[in-house]
Amino acid sequence: MKQYFSFLTITACICITLSSCAKKIIGENPQYKVERKRTSELIIVLDSLSKITPKTFYSKISTSYKDTNQEVSFKTSVRIIKDSVITAMITYAGIPFINSIITKDSLKFINKKDRCFVKTTLKILRQNLGVDFDYKNLQELLLGLPLGYNSQQKYYQIHDPYSYIVSSHRKREIKKMERKNFDDYILKYYFSNDTLGIKKIEIENNKDSTSIVVNYIKKKKIENLWVPDQVEIRISTKKNYIVIMLNYEKIELNQEQEIYFTIPENYEHCN
Image (cartoon, helix red, strand yellow):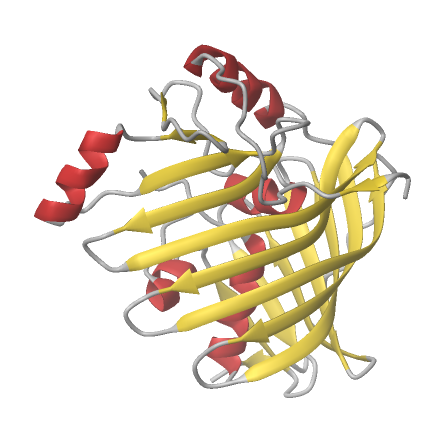
């Protein structure tokens, strides 16, 4: 199961490599028991959410990054052209620092401070964090969609009196995997009790001790789409523990977006 992960983790990797319209809270801890729903109902919701993707997306995101060795805050301007390209301009202290472009099979970024560039593939996440992913996952994470959802896969409900949870594995399968240290990803979707949007996603691989939790602390409704407003990402691996906080300060949907990315001729490969 190699379809699990996201864009701001790429920002983390770059750092490592380089060393209301009615706002509504989605993801509150419920204080009451929820009405039981059939598993098929929840899977229909997942399937429906996975298909709601705007043609274009733009946002300015205030980002806080912390790992076992460093802590830094910066601004990120993100543009998405559906199923095609993602760009991100990272600004530190008001100065553009990194400009990056991600396609289905490549990652390129320029370091304006050191006047250098990198051309690589999305495998950089596997190398730095031990997590496989693809372009679609980055798009899903930024838009608050069901990360890694596959309509051809079987899903199961984990019954909880206070929350709706759908998992890629049955509860007994998860326990078996934990005992025998199977090399496979366990994916869990947590739904908000009121809107049935995605409030949290958990990804685990016991064998390589990888754990990722994406917590959509707040979402807001724009053009009939619930989009992220505040997101917390926690990544735990054998080598590192990373916490990324994203605060979306401005969002545009389905408006024309121009992509700006060029590598100056006098830039050299980053060491």
